[in-house]
Length: 344
Image 1 (tube, helix red, strand yellow):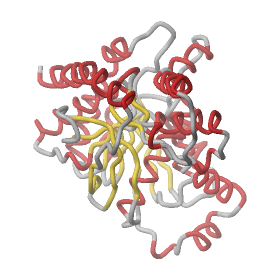
Image 2: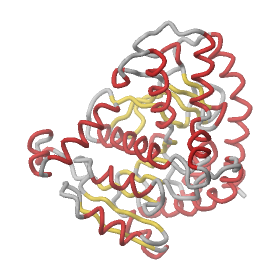
Image 3: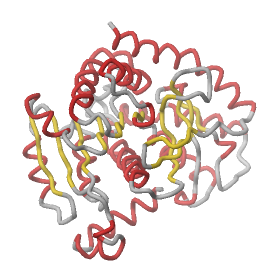
Image 4: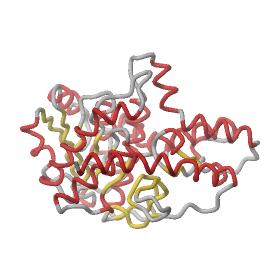
C-alpha cells in the first residue's frame, strides 16, 4: 500500500499528466470521478488536497472550507495532473462543492492539542460533522463518505443517524477512516521485525482511539518471532501514536501529514472499488455484525457500491482476545454518545 502510493507520487511528479494517464491508465477507460474534501484549508485538508490532486483517478476535485479555500484551490490547481480543481468557501457554497461527488472526505474540525481528550474534540467537532452530513444527504446522498474528523468512534454514528433521518442512509457508503492506525502498525512492526515496510501487512480492528485500536500483530506478514513484551509495546505505541505526535509538536499541531497520507490511501481504495478493481481490501470503521457492537473496524472489501463485504477478525492470540474484550465497553460508550447527540 505504502509502496504503491510512493510509486504513484513519483510518477506524477516526474511526468506530464497526459503521459501518466497513457502509461498507467487508458484515459478513455478511466471514469470521471469527483472527490470533495470538506475542511480543505486545514492542517489535514491541505496536504490531503495535494495528494488527491496527484491521484489520476480523480477528474474533479472540489475543495471546501469555511474560509481560505480559494487560495488553497488556486495553489493546488497549478499542478499538472488530470483533475480540475475548484475552491468553495462559506456555507452558501457547500451545496455546489458536494453536487455530483462520488467520494466525500471529511477532515473538517479542530485538531487535538496537548492535554485534549477525544471527548474535548467531540464537543466541538460533533456539531460540525452533523451540519456537513445534513448537506451531504441533500446534495450527494449516494457518495461514499470517508470520515476523518475525530472522534471517529462517535462521528461515524452521528453521520449514520443524520442520514437515517434524511432517508438516505446506506451503511455500505459510510466509512470511518482508520487507515492511519494500519500505517503506524506497519511502520512500527517493520522496525522491530527488521523487514522491508513495503512488504508488511497488519490488520487493525476495533475503533480509532486509544485502547479501542487493536492491531492484530499475530496476523502480521511477513511473520516474525517477536516476544510478548515487544508485541505489547508495539500495540501500546500504535494506540498512542496520535498522542506521540501531538506531544512532539508541542502545541503546534497534531498528526496532520501522516493522516493526510492515510486519508489519501483510503480514498484511492474507494475510487478503485468504484471503478471495479477487484479485491480491494482495507480496514475501516463501518456498520458491522462482526461483534455485538453496531459499528466496528475490521478488514472490508470495497467495490462498486462501497462495502462489498465486511470480513471477520480471523484467529486471535490470547493477548488480542483480551484486548478485544477490554475495548468493547469504551467503544460502545463512544458509539452511544454519537447516536445520542445526533438524535437530540
